[in-house]
Image (cartoon, rainbow over all chains, first blue to last red; front, side, top):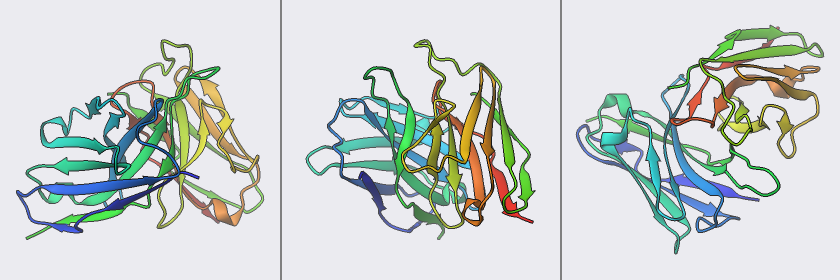
Length: 125
Length: 112
């Protein structure tokens, strides 16, 4: 069973950098066919996709956040991380990491099959 | 960006009765590989989202068979055959055909 767990500071000051790490167990971040994603959910609101990283280091970001976001991968620790620069109160949200199964065996797939429990990050002075 | 519009936004249902949620996409979700990457997620209160259905109609591991998905192109439906108390929560459709990945605004299912 694949499990993901977010970790990082729950409180970040405005204009500073938000940093979160997702630790993966039961699966390998160095495996082909899987993308490692970050998604956020503002309090009481819907879901917003932030971006992904592939085991090759290829990344993709939501254009709405691209200028402030960086996702990195540490396959030796089986972890991937999110950094959001210049945060404001609008970045207060629960941040989820999730695996996208994009494996192509007999047929191709693309779905977010495993999610972390989420980490609430509050931006406040 | 692809806009996914869900209806209704709120669905009070009687235990044991069926429920249905629609998701309409602003563009076709058919991928160049021929697949349609439309998923349904369930988010119970205080919990992370959980995958229910993928590629329109494939149930994910462990999902009860009272859940079913249908549709094609731009119009999709999630049906719950007979609602149980554990089905209370918010349901989201999600597309992974196009970048950026996008979600519907969510449909809240609660018991009457």
